[in-house]
Image (tube, rainbow, N blue to C red):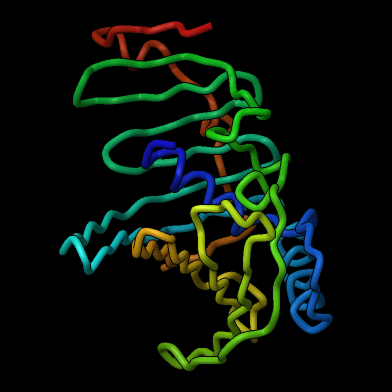
Length: 218
């Protein structure tokens, strides 16, 4: 899975928890996840600004990037690493200004590399056991962490920590610990809901990219 799809996978995981499959469910953790899910589903749309950090101390690696995600129903716009992805409910448009290229494709919701908010937890599809973990104060907010351990013994993920702000029941961050000593942290810096979005926001306007090469994959 490339970086764009990895980040997209984690982001949509943060916005949907109703299909979590687990063998050992902590009742308190389950109840909190249900509250998060209900809160998210109550919004007409969501827009988040986020940071994504990848670290590996053994290899002296630290990479950080920032982005924005806007979701309304099945439609979304993801902006990350200078690339914009627009899904209008039918087609996915990947726009790369640096390459002056637009790739038009279908979203394959059965593919592990692509995710729609409406298809829920692709990232957790193999199932996780979850339990309440530590509580921390961050920037004046109380963050309750839920630990998720993969049921699949061959998973590349050792465990993940999902941070939920107690007051709002919004997700604050997701920390993922890999078997190869790699740690990835996605933190939501700004969480807006029910914002005014123009009808054209999720629409690809070909007239704006007359000089771009249009690549049709399907």
